[in-house]
Length: 184
Image (tube, rainbow, N blue to C red):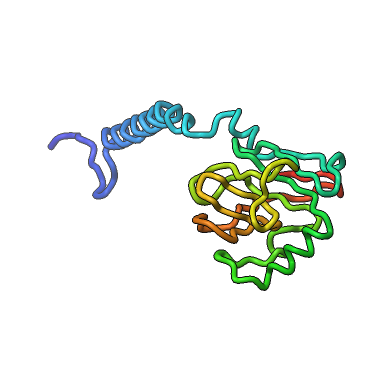
């Protein structure tokens, strides 16, 4: 008989253990290499720094007089900020009961009644409505007027007449202080 070592049944051979280790190590190095190669492709889909900088805008409201409107830019779109008069607020609340194409009460469109903040883009074809300056036409309802196709908005930015299907959008905003808002 030979003096060959006997291997117990079910015990792994030394070669199999080394082979398993090499397979696992090679797979791990391959997975890490693949992840490192793919990461630049995934990272390039993140928004650029200039886009992230535009994601929110802070606006000081203290210089705005009652009845005055300003326009600021947020995410490349005009945002209308109007400090409404008591007459405009009363008219907006009275219009809550009107037959509106896109019904929404004034109280849902503002956080503080005197401040109306809207994205200044017509919901019909993306034009910028007139009515921010005192010399511009404000339409039949005292708000904004889009001369391209004749959409009329009221003092709460709700569509009242014309082809626009929806009210002017209200962006997400918070009052940081009594005289400062953060849009976005």
